[in-house]
Image 1 (cartoon, rainbow, N blue to C red):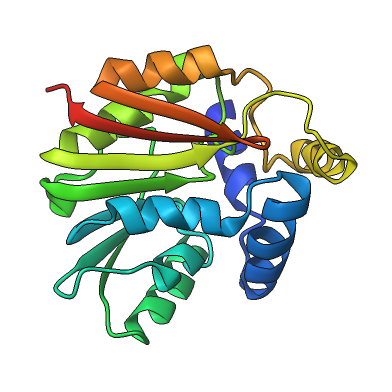
Image 2 (spheres, one colour):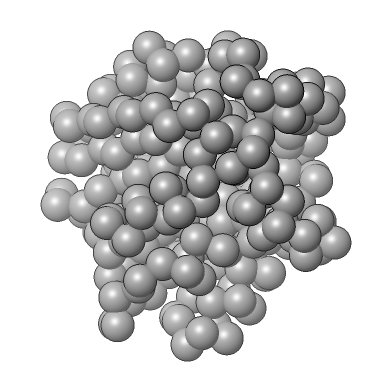
Length: 223
């Protein structure tokens, strides 16, 4: 196992069953609002605007956004994560709501397995890229992999935390702690790098800032 693999394993290691049990409160409700100044409802709007009938979710966490979003009646969801624990947790949560769910243990820096299929009408990658090791020149390849499985008319959407001084003491404390833990790997992340990586994979890119969170959408995948 190389250094990048070690860093990736450290980044996903905190997502244990006990942590997922408090994820909705700690991350979704408290951290989003008071540390990053971007309430969960703001990111939930991305799901309600762009969630398609055939959705691919990278790094689902506890599945809160998918559980709360308005999902198409005939929709199905494929979950992708390097850690099997959030996959199982989110699958149970969504299936309890009557959704059709598939799970794939996969590293987003590698091409999406052929067994997953193509033609997804939406792809979500929310609060993932700041966890992935490397600069956008390296980890931006994830966008290219996802563009290849997105339908021509589909939308990729997501959010990340770039390497900027957070506007709150709470945010600065979390950034330091998560960096030491290995959960944050965003020391080389800036908006220019994010935009370049997205534009390499998509013809239409939109980036907005809410508090310390960078939200993005991308359409018209390059083939």
